[in-house]
Image 1 (cartoon, rainbow, N blue to C red):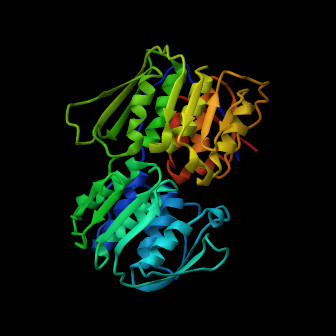
Image 2 (cartoon, rainbow, N blue to C red):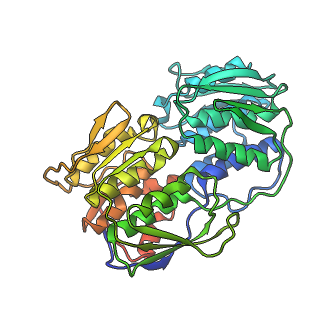
Length: 416
């Protein structure tokens, strides 16, 4: 399937964002460990969450988490401490996404896990049992999902867990989100040093839990307004929290530099409310930013800045290599189709100094990566008739994305 996208000249709409995938996935695992019989409220309906819901509800011998990297990491740890034998597998891309750091850590704690195929990669056979816990060291510069997976099972370990993170700790906001969600379920877990997290063996308590909406999904609406630059346009996004622990809530500060103003409906920072986005003028000459805390915003900002003719230097991108696609390589490749020559440095940086090439306007390929489709779609504001291949990949995190674009006035035509 292929979509051809044409943007409106003005937007005035209210968009119901999906629930936070990051919080949903954490709440599901913790609720299951706590023995909660009811689902958290406002659960995400995206593919990544649905695979966890099905796995926990159906409890099959073979669990296929498809392309959901978060589900692979979180379910691996969950199954390691839950009685029963399971095989966990996924797509071909998933079978090439590393999981050795997490498996090594779980084995150190006594977990019974074996590789079915290539060493260091899914699929895995897991025989769940009680684990003793203790003190363990893992690298903090590979994936915060390994850290979160270990933390969530830590209250269930007989001796709790003292987790030491080595190297540069990336995606720290996601680790803090995990800790915050654990606190909500009664766990005692704290940073005791800049690189050490200690969790006591308290287990979890049952509770009702309501999930806020997704700041990551909001980023594409920020991008849309920034590219339009129309001061009369307005987008309202209900269900967001001012003091959200979601790392991607920082999108509002980034886009304030790119000419998008964020206003909250009321002054209650801890309750869901409606956010209104309005375009202003941006005079930013260049954007330098370290994305190690918000790697999932990278694609959005690369497309936005280039389309706004704002040079950039983005660092902290090492984890993009092991996402749904190799996001560093595919960004360079797809941006050339729009006429932008993006350079890579040190395997973890992307730069654009204004260099351009002839735009081929070939359809944008998505590489089974939902954020490629959603980051490039708003570029239709600057490139009318922009085409995107395999647009259905958005179901991974934002199933109603294309319907919401149409509601906002975008024309979307399906091509063969």
